[in-house]
Image (cartoon, rainbow, N blue to C red; front, side, top):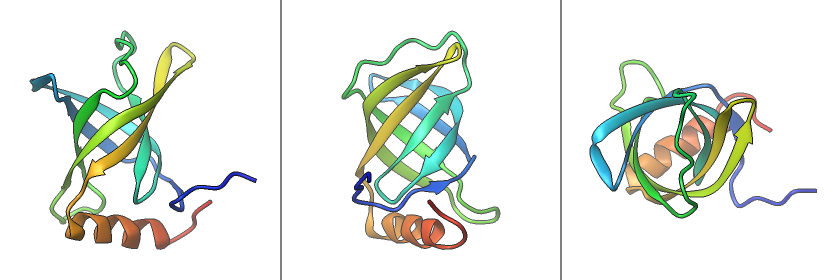
Length: 113
């Protein structure tokens, strides 16, 4: 049985992000799952450059329509090749209290795994 600090929710949300070393370049992707502590990110670009583990990124995440998007800092914890693309495990490293509460409320609402 896998033990995780946070409950995960399967969720395909649009994610925009910037690498901290390239803040002027915005990339997009979708989440495969989401928790209050991180997400599994699938970048849109197929020719995506492999990001070294521990690389930091700034994430913009829209949980619900008509709500302000969350701006969260994260770090790549794993990079998994997946059918010509990548799955990037992202751990949130800087979230304010309101963002953390929004994430917890969102993940715990509805069906989770």
